[in-house]
Image (cartoon, rainbow, N blue to C red; front, top):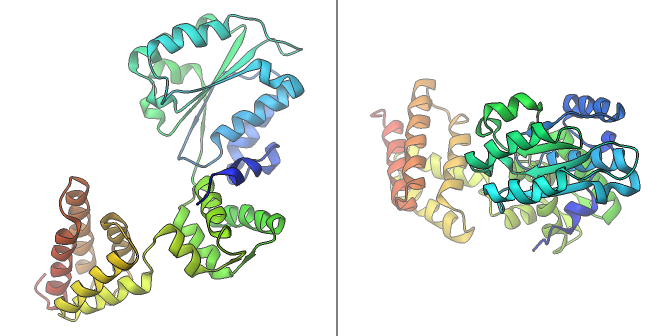
Length: 320
């Protein structure tokens, strides 16, 4: 399996190379070029370029001296108030090396900081703003207290679109001498759901098996359900054949090692392609959400999925 080497190897090194975040990147680049950045908060899903953009900012500002002027902390590992009082304060109070009058502290996964640590951080950001700038990265900006948000310029990141993922994948394929089938790009994008880091790791795992990347190979790596398999299950159910629908579903889950939640997601996508009335589709979608909640809460996935199939059978018979 992948060890993530490609993720670092193909990390962008310039603003122009960062895909899919045009507005945020342009704003950050303009601030960096002015040589006087504010405190910044990068918020958005995983694998969309937040940590990479922070590194690009630091390297653009400090050039070869960037390591001496940069401190990176992962708040999910070190989330207590002592980290802010000791590590952060000690680094922030010392003068920077070079022409830039401030250092940079990058707090990754800042939404994992305890409320007390965030309160301490708020005062540190204020007291040491002359010698230090903070870049905070988080998945959900709502988990960052308002006083910190008001001290930062906030940049929102979004999941990458298919064209952005393709751009990255084709660049890697060219440099690694891989052959990627067009249908494989589609499966790869569906498997990563806009997370570029996950996409690169899936590609590396697949390439370790064969340099010819096809959809079946990727589906094997990500253990994903094929839409046509789910369609067969639902067609059986809608025709009133509960036994065959149940057997086919069990076959899919055991042979492909698919989890109940993955099956639920595949069914939810396929519902809207079924030849049934829109009102029934709405009811089945509601039922799908209820079953997904029960699985997450700890119910047996196969029993819950059988219950969902029963709802499809009733819908097919006009009794739902």
